[in-house]
Image (cartoon, rainbow, N blue to C red):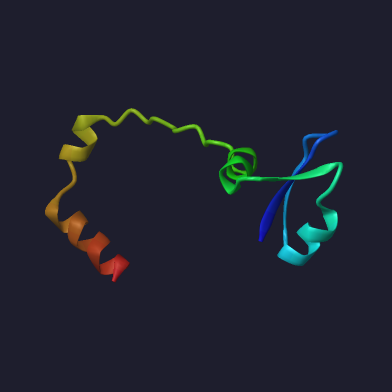
Length: 72
């Protein structure tokens, strides 16, 4: 697999080696995979949730056991 970038539009694609050989030329140029990753994978925003300490302390042992049984 090779990554190609269109010089006119800036579009980046990932294609098979044979197809990349045919396409490379004036408008399509080879680029690194890391550049393709930067465009295709947008960073996800982390969602920060406020956790109330009182709620976590009130979980009893029996509730924890029920959760374990459900997960098995």
